[in-house]
Length: 387
Ligand SMILES: Cc1cc2nc3c(=O)[nH]c(=O)nc-3n(C[C@H](O)[C@H](O)[C@H](O)COP(=O)(O)OP(=O)(O)OC[C@H]3O[C@@H](n4cnc5c(N)ncnc54)[C@H](O)[C@@H]3O)c2cc1C
Image (cartoon, rainbow, N blue to C red; front, side, top):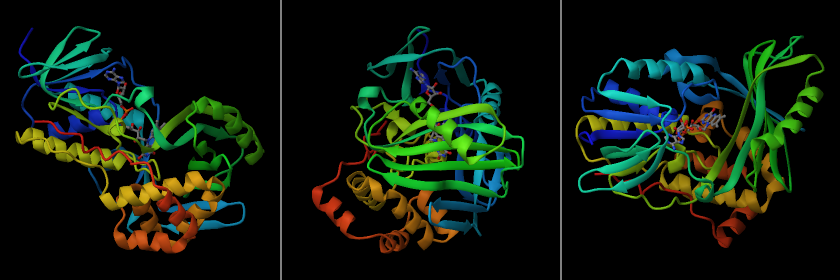
């Protein structure tokens, strides 16, 4: 077998490609391999997040909204971001830009159409079984999705939707509908996500926060019904988008070696109470690439502060005990916060001050009861250590 690679990245999705981009930016000069089963990338998702001004990925942003809305059947909350806007990156733009960057580097080899299997610790390297033979590497970053038996969470954010085009002008392209028509009952929260591109085109998703994990296809019919009842005009579906995201992931199985580090969604990156993770992946990629490029020890990077994990665990536990109240709670939170505060709360690690504002907007009894009943521990990802 040839000399071990210095680094193997398993999975060239959001986390794997973000890390590759950051390694290039930080001048990483050692040999690395990225293993990815996909032969061809399709536009399989859109990533949205709140950000201010220019950033590393500004060129890839396809749309920005500085006005967004949340609504229940009784109330609409309008937010206008002053520092922040809600920004969208299409995955096909992201994939193509990143693949092109990697292709220009001779020291980083992307092996598409190759699936990684078992990993085992050897004397001074890690052996990775793949569908194209074994690969050895001194360090491994594993971004592969969790196996179903290890993918457990307090709640699941399940959505089914599509990019649609309408015959008549149905949308206001300046306003993003983040959680529209929120309702909740014993089975959890339901809302519609509407990201309008033009007056005639939008990404629309029927979303549920549910106690039970189900395939997103189970929401297809409901989405189509919602579409028919909300827009009384001819609609064409351009592209489907579905997902099932863990909210409050529980612990993963132990790592096979301390040369292996998990990352991305498999390592618990998604914010437990909102499901946002794109920006956290970017922050992780930047700091990890810096450590790798300068030959430092890779440090564990728990996602989110201890305060955030504790508060999110209480929030999720309260939602599982009182699923019928979730719509009212999200409306209260949105009403209490400014646009920028709401953006920070949903996609970043909120400060104590922000948490106090959120807590003051909510009824106290369900949260105290959830606290007293004990909560499942949210994955802290502090098992990620690689030497
Ligand atoms: C439809 C959808 C929309 C989302 N929208 C948002 C959003 O708007 N904002 C936000 O913050 N978050 C969003 N998320 C959540 C999160 O940001 C994404 O899931 C993100 O892609 C997670 O990145 P990742 O690298 O961990 O996983 P992925 O991007 O899924 O990458 C995992 C990679 O591992 C590869 N792989 C699988 N098996 C193997 C194997 N055996 N060997 C090697 N490689 C393997 C896969 O092919 C894939 O390329 C969304 C998720 C989905 C599914």
